[in-house]
Amino acid sequence: MTARILMTAALLASLAACQSPSEPTLTTSETLRLRSGLEFGECRGYCRTELRLDGDSLLLIQRGWRAGEFPDRAFRAPLAPEEWRALRALFDRDAFLALDTTYGCPDCADGGAEWVEVETDALLKRVTFENGEAPQPIERLAGTLRRLRERAVAEAGWQ
Picture (tube, rainbow, N blue to C red):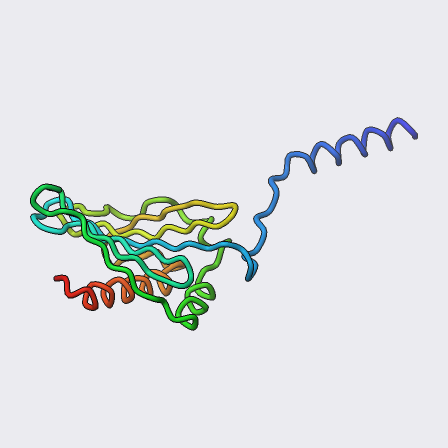
């Protein structure tokens, strides 16, 4: 009887050791950085646009494939606290972790590749998809980031 109990305990312990630890939920004090971008491979001009958000400001960066002809340019602006809170609320760690890294055929036929990248204290992941076709679990987050990116381009006076 004792051997059976010991074997059962050993089996349960080994099963517990095989389980992967669950990801902690995002706390209000945890660092969160969001990045979003759009790029076109068959393009002349500023073909790559990236938006970086860290909580109190946004940084917009545009790059061309030919750096000499189209040097990098950057635009920084404050981010309203309510916008940051809304973005944090749209981020669902479990849903984001469950996503594949690529959806569809990004930038096939020069349709553009769009991406969302999330960095926390314990996570760095990028999801890339066809321009405007975010996977359903991050559709609202991607749409909000896209609108912020477009607004920043307009505020910077860029085309």
